[in-house]
Image (cartoon, rainbow over all chains, first blue to last red; front, side, top):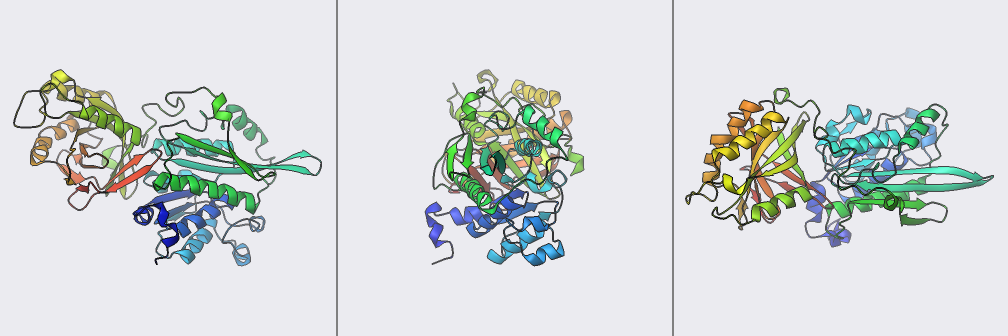
Length: 271
Length: 175
């Protein structure tokens, strides 16, 4: 019995497929660290890690793999994720970039799937656009906590997967100019964004489930996107109805221009 | 440097569907795929953008090959490269079993016309691709005389499919 025998239903070649898959995780906080851990257990051969930040005391409530000593040492989040992955399967390749993802796009371009675990609509919009530029599936997770009455909070989150052929997060209605503008206006005034480990874990599991449907044949899905909404209060997950109320474009109008593919200034002599 | 050719699954299906259409006299069809490109330190990424089928009237009767296209078809492809910042990849299909790779005729003929694309778009890679029922194989020109194999094909859709070629460039149909 090999150490993948309990996931053999994924297909006879699935372990080879996974070992040859390159996944990039942008953001190694509460959501991204969960995804990194799951991809390591599954046996993804190359897990690329991108995050500019170092761990802070307030991260310890949810950052998978982190220790009190990491906080003391103020270790980079990518280093913590790398160590965690090596602890599960030392053979997994883990190129890292302790940088903003825009400065580490070499870890995006030739991967097979991008996970986005970023704060804010603007950054998600940019990363979705970058994934489409390099013809990649993009899987995004995020959560939020809103006070709806004194002593009552609504915990919610979403997992959205977009494909280069399908609608982008703007087409779906998740990213809107109003939301981006509101975010810009709140800049510097947002305070700390509430995040909890169990909701992050649920969303990360949804993201990894979407990833596994992409790369292994265990369940054939032909949807051009996935948007699952998590109601953290009732602990339920439902497909979002928002896209049904949006204009149905034959082709994404936001990222389908002739210059929206590849490096904008590509030229062979640069090789 | 490793070369990856990446296309949307629906795009590849569209190309296959066109190439499978019978022609009035040619035994097979061919077309051109335009690509955009990106690089990292270790990888050249070729991303399929549009497909340009060859018009029925641009084939030349020639029983010695599966499909022979005339000067007009090549002129149109050169014009596409001249007017757009794209690389041009010749494409045809092999629908029979076995290792997926070009025939000797394919390899010989490619040398005659692929370098011409550098005369009109010299800063983009050009090349040739052969599609199988699911996989693909191909060669990339990095200059008029610099040829390399495409080492990996990615088809991106509701399923992500990755095909690796061996040292010769061929891809097993079983993959």
